[in-house]
Image (cartoon, rainbow, N blue to C red; front, side):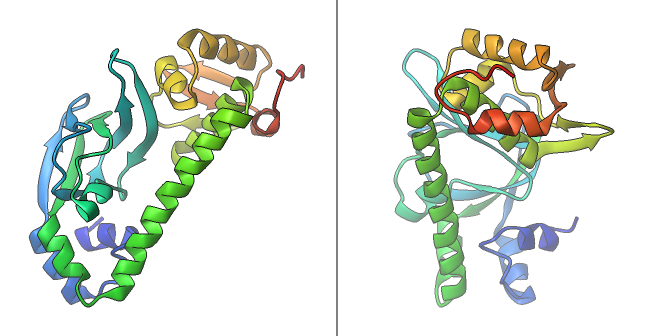
Length: 234
C-alpha cells in the first residue's frame, strides 16, 4: 500500500487532493517502535499526531499502583494523539506498541497549516473527536449497566470486528490479548475473567489457542453480550 493510499484510509485526510497529499507526505516523520516500547506516556507534552503505518498499539490509562485501564487497541490506518494536537494539553493516555510498530508523525504546526482554509478537513477532525467521545460514553454506560458476563462477551465481539479472521468455522481474533488485558478492558479482575472464559470454553462458545481467542459460536456470544444481571445458563 502506497503512502497516499494509507492517508486516504484515514477519515481526516481522505478528502485531500493529490497536491495536498504530496505536501502532507513531505511533513511526515517515520518512527519505529519495538513490541512493548512506549510511544508516549500520559502527561507527556503533546506536539504531534501519529498515524499507524504498521503494527498495533494499546491506549491505556495507568494507575498509581501499576495497573492500567485499556481504552482501545489501534492498528494500521488509525491515528493517535489528536487530542493533545488540538488543545496543546499533555497526553491524556499512554500508548504502547503491542508488536513491532511503525508510525508517521505530523507536527502540530504542519497540521494546523493543513487545516487553514480547509473546512472539510476541520469537519473530519471534529467527526473523529466526536466518535472517540461517543465511545467513551458507551464504555462508561457499559461499566454501570452490564454485568461482567455481558461486558466480556461484548468486548470479545468488538475485538472480532476489528481484528477477526475467518478460519473455516471459527473466527480467530488476530491479536494476542491476555486475560489481564481483557480484565483491564472490561473493568474486572483477572480471576473473574479467567472464570468467565472457562464457562465460555465449556459451553463451546469460545476457545483459546496459542494465546489467541477463537469464537466458535458468535450467535450465542452475542446473546450473552446483550444479557444483564445474571449469568446465562445456556
